[in-house]
Length: 146
Image (tube, rainbow, N blue to C red; front, side, top):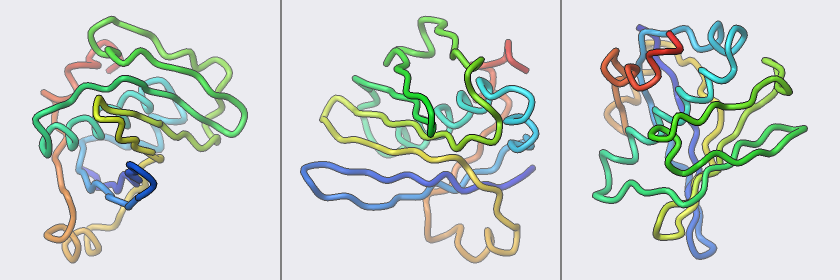
C-alpha cells in the first residue's frame, strides 16, 4: 500500500483555498502513469470524487476538463456512467496533468497530479488532513483497466 497527496485547490466567488487529500492505494501510480495515462487520470478523478462525496450531500459535476501543457479536452460530467474513454494518444507520461471540475453550486476544483509521500510524513499529518483509502471495491469502477 502506497500513500499519496492529491493537491486540490477550491475556488468560489473569488476566494480560493488549498485542500490536499491524502490517500492510500494498492497501486504504484508512477508506473501506471508510464504504462496507461488514461488509467492514471481515472484514478485521479476517482480519488477526488470519493473525497468530495464524503464531505457533501451533492456530488453532481457540470463540467470536467483535462489540462496538460499542450492540450485541453473535456470529459462528460457523467463520465463513469456513460463509458466515455479518455483520448490519450496525444499525451506523454512526463506531462503534468490537471483536472478542472465545476460542481452544481458553481464551485470549481483544480486537481493536480498525486505525489507519493513517505510513511513517516503520513503519520505526522494524517490527523490534520482529509485521508481516504482507495480499495479494490473503489477501483472496480475501472476494473476493465486493471
